[in-house]
Image (cartoon, rainbow, N blue to C red; front, side, top):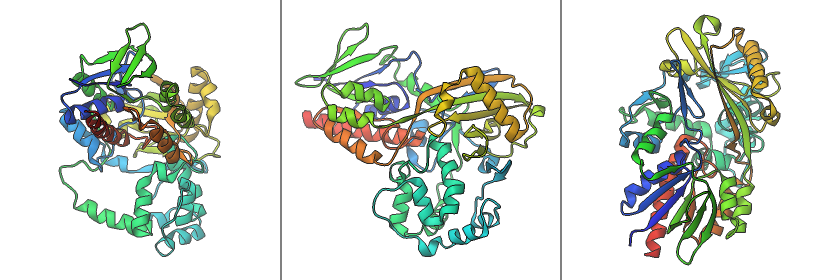
Length: 453
């Protein structure tokens, strides 16, 4: 008998899981249910007046294969970021400072005191493996000193999660750094070895941030096309009830739907409500994963109205600088076709767990706050000719200390049921993380279904 799998959630996680599941089990009957009328979650792109505004991630790093392989399997044309995008900046003490990209540049940087540079330079001698979970801030401070942690850990984490480096788990958010530490002790030695390996990397693989013409949303559109006919939009699942074999799902304004297995590719707080009737332990663990509210503004200007050179990826803003925005991306410098000739596109991120009050602002108030910060940081006084506002209520999961234990507790509680969790709430917040977890989920579900056959 043909087995039926229902994937709840038509974002990147759900669609990618469907793609990989189809590869390992082409015999399955797949259905994807998405409560919104648009798929993709926050991995979308708006095209207006010659501008391309990515709602969330503006691409992926090709250093890991999963998203790259998925894109090529879908026949998508890759777009590599411009060379200038390797330059990144930090707004501090009323000015933009280029972030050091090499040890000599680090030693020459005016972002650290001489004593802080000396402490950081001693990392190869002091670096050693550590047992137990720790925050991103504590990990950086232990290796490079508190000065480096204060200057760089906070902004680095803000740019990825809009969260607090002192609360977020290094082990959950950046397991690669823990693995490097375990293997080499010193991060500096590990990164030097990795740089040598990169020089011999596959020359056909892109080296920089990679996206698609038309924005990162093209990936979701291609996945959507691949599953046309098996994807239902505007379908809200209100309850999931276990049966002797499989599940029955109650859909709003629809007939009940039965499946042999279910993949919950939703935010963790939605998954918590769906599993609560049959697994309260899993529901409790999932509900403990907090999210940060974020707001994104895509702003288009005439080039003459922006005095900044825009010679980089953009800049991040540490807290305490009198500026509310978390960072600004020079989108049309990263991917020049994202703005018309003679125009520039900036993408501004604000709010997050470090400024939760920003979410309470009206769109007009939020735009005024953003424009004020662009005037302070970049000298922009002109009105934007394009305003694309993307509010993200509960937008980015926060991997606070204890995150891995929470995820393990939820998955252990669900182990007796043919239901799996996937998405950016569990094992990584980026595009690569989401696609990699989708592949893992598809393989795990295939094994679990095999155990029932």
